[in-house]
Image (cartoon, rainbow, N blue to C red; front, side, top):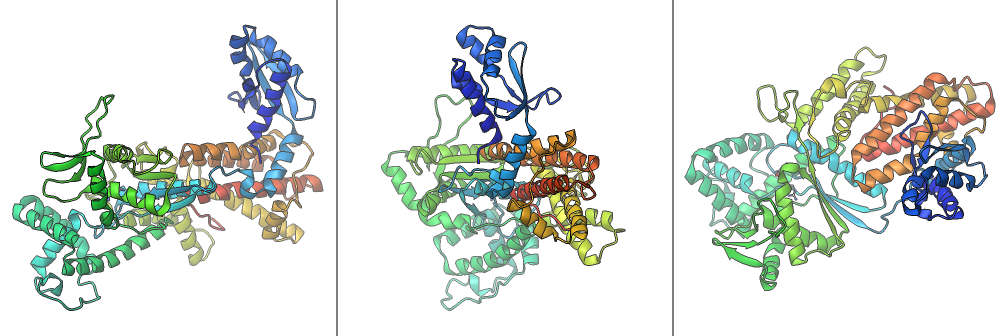
Length: 598
Ligand code: ARG
């Protein structure tokens, strides 16, 4: 289905041509003066320069050449040469009726057959998820869903930090505390126990303890480094212990991500790229792009046009160890081999921007992916506290993600306390609405920007919030319930009838609030195409917010179920069902779920 602006632009392009001008000037846009008109065509202004003619003359000629087919209610050329457009009810209704029966509400996916990998986990094994992991998870999940909506086959990868320094520290400390563990015995040749010798709780205590100790103790630090090295070299006992730890850690991470309604297709870790590292380095040596610098093996990625520091990409450190750079490079080798993706998108803290720039440049230099594969770093800003600094617990510690999610949920639950609902219902509402508050509060800000976490604002049922959007949806559902009491047709059947074109918009002209709502609905494809093109979930939020506002005005200014004119009432029902569907599509792309009641 064509976008509404495309349809209008085509009519204007034809009129430009008929009047003797190039069709390219026919582009129509949504009006930035909604008090005057709904759409505008400003092409006469640009054409005036090219044709050396007064813009108002061109505008008048174009208006005279528009077809008289009932598309417009009014078209007016105004000084100095703008064309103000008001679309007819008939066109709008026909467009919405078609949207209602179309797949994806008429949105045309442009990327069918393409593949995108989204790297948006980045949690580190044996360290609990903390608020720093919140934004990549929330934004990444939404980006994945948006690209999927556009037709991409999407693969989300958790890309766990599974064998860097933290695991070395844990091994070192475990060896101090439990030296007799068979995993540490170098002479042991038998099977290792299948049980993990530490619990998650213990790990969570061991890691910060060991990390603090290593900062003061050089020898301890060296031991940890050695442990990582031996693990990577394949020492049997270490591998076995690492696998046990990975298992319980991954399970816990999965549970936490599930609670956020964030799901990964792949649960790879940095270690999964390891087999690709040495062959990749060999290849880079053969291509002559790897060189020794101060004992390390690096790829120079500086360019003449750089006006900032651009250190080389590190393949092997001077002690022969592989690090973050080579791991990310090899991960791209692996992804290219497994999926040959058209896009790889990283949703990672924006402070890692330099690292990814180095890596992407090295990838291009080595030709690891084709020129037509986009490598995109979507660096996310920080979630700050009211003091403008990164969000912390009251005593200044790093806040666990679980605790934050629970806090928001409790906040919503408090508001629900005196509602006449069962405990089970209240619980379900608090879970869904709490998560929506948290996610929407995040996603409604551009990903790269920092924002302030404000629990009262985020959980408010009014304003640009997740709960407000959900409240609007619940309101529509309750109207449908009322309608079904009156007519005996269940809400689901009504929705079904609308989606099959059996209940349609009415041709009887409605009031202003109805027209405004319908206009916003009709722009669904435009907005969502833009959100996809710019990989911008916040554009989905602003569409949903405006749609909700227009819906609520419409709701206040019209009697829906009690409308006596049958055609009109059916028209209203079609409008609210389509509104609900648009909202449902939108929140799903944000990774948000709606409750039945609120
Ligand atoms: N584990 C990393 C960290 O905590 C983030 C990983 C991000 N993804 C990537 N491909 N490097 O800093």
